[in-house]
Figure 1 (cartoon, rainbow, N blue to C red):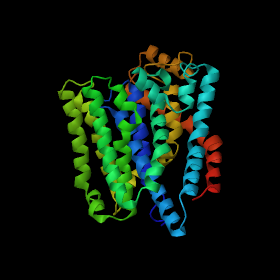
Figure 2: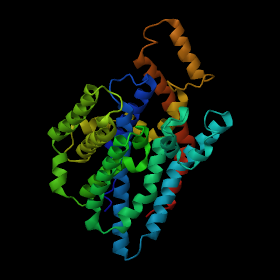
Figure 3: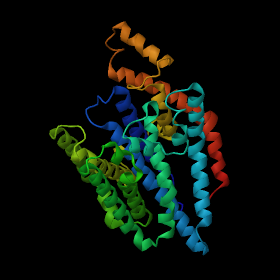
Figure 4: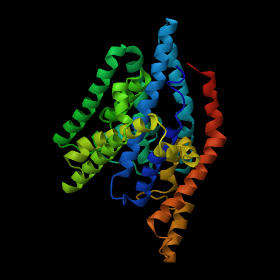
Length: 367
């Protein structure tokens, strides 16, 4: 069974791609020509669905072999998730609270309870420098119910349940759009994101039980190409309809991102070894993928195009670059590279001095 849920190096490389899409889009002020941050976040959701389902399927199988219930597996799952996710998140909130970075103090209850996405949805407005934490809230809310789905539903019903969750998410986004509500609500509410998580769960199910009739489709480079093309078509169609938040972008964009993410993950986990897989297994990319959680949390506080922290030394340096009149220093690529180096250094310090030592506690809570 260890082979079924063993470490897949290339998926850390894929985390690099996901977080880079988010950072580049946010730091450029959405100047990349396509909704890169949307795609990056969706990749994280699909990855979470895939990886968490693998873990839970293995726990379910072990419980069945031992002839016991799932209470122990549930407890271990939540302890391990808490150890990995909570420390750096709450440390960041504490520092921001002390420094009085807006709007942390006024919204601390929403942020501390991982409910910021619900606040954003209810008010149909963003939260400034902590906007990006909405996706972490979605992940936590997903973790609250999904283990019960995997562990307690009969195996024969799991695939149907995943298909239902995908359809439910699309239907919810359609409801919000056609009822004239803000696009923000279907974007940030957890149930409207379930197609991404459930699709990752489906792939994990097929992989875990070696359902070759499904897996063989992901081995073909042509299907990965088709996944990219359908996403490109969706983006072009949104632009053709005038851009903004139209029926395609609100209802179908996340589904299109999910399909692309699914085909990419499926291609990376399928044999044989290919050039693309080797690329995503390149050590620098894998390393950045390993620390991507810290990078994601910190990046908006390093620099935010729309809500810059005025006294930040990084902001002051960028202002000096602007005043210099140097075309290279003022270019978007240079800005992204400069900020990327800073956030990688800070996230590395966080990883080695704080996250990794705490993460070792997970060894005491195995399944």
